Amino acid sequence: MKLTDLPQPSVAGVVREKTVVGAIAEINNCLYGGADMIDLHMSCLDDPSEENLQKIISSTSLPILALNYNNKCDWTNAGYSEEDREELFIRAIKAGAKGVDIQGYTYDLQSKGGYVGADEYSFTKNNPKEIVTDKKIIQKQMDLIARIHDMGGQVLLSCHPGVQMNTEQVVDLALFLQERNPDIIKIVTRAETEDDLIESFRAMIELKKKVKTPVSYHTNGKAGKLSRIINPILGGQIAFCVDRYKEGSTMEQLDLKSARRMVDDLKKLY
Image (cartoon, rainbow, N blue to C red; front, top):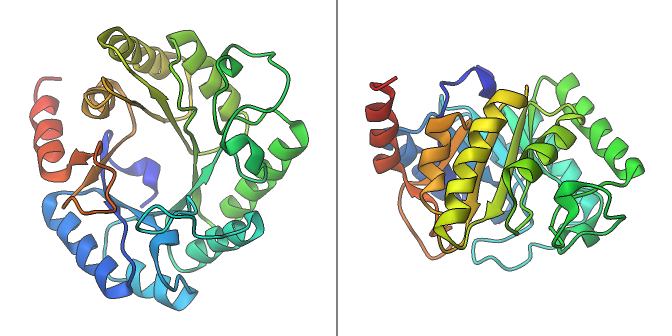
């Protein structure tokens, strides 16, 4: 099953473990917690060899979205070069992952920490992170996406600008990312106030109307957590959840069992 064939919204269990056994155990926890898919952080693994990835991926019937945000379990830098990250994406598809999460800054590390380029778009205001407008780099990303497609995998193209954006900016960014031909787009902006949060709801409704590619959109920040469950209900593709919170967890992510219950209950209303 393709990731885009899963029910919308899909409930993803996030797995950040150091060992094969630990990853398999956490995947089982997510399975029994009601996950539709697994979000596997490969850079957390001590040894993400193809053999180990195969062991992890073959342990479950749940489809795996593999990613490499270049962070270890304790959030320190894992030390991968961009070439290493590219190779690990390919390795994951060979090992049986249904898709990979390619970040918007791929092949352009300077953009990971802030915008580099001419301020020519609505979404390049306020120094957003992970946004690349350089055509040569975009083409290189598109070549990687095409290679993964040729191998039978899907691509989630993720972008974490880390700044507040209004509806117009979010939609413009999604349409810009869509041109790279990903299967799913993920955008994470920031909400510091209730007004920011409400704006994220408006943005999600417009994304559903105007962007052909499925979009997973939510906000981080002081007022952002509610968007992680409301936006999937409004049309977002994936709700990212944690089965058991640990030292290395993203604490803003939803509790898996609670999210599963809320999604199922709210689906009865529409």
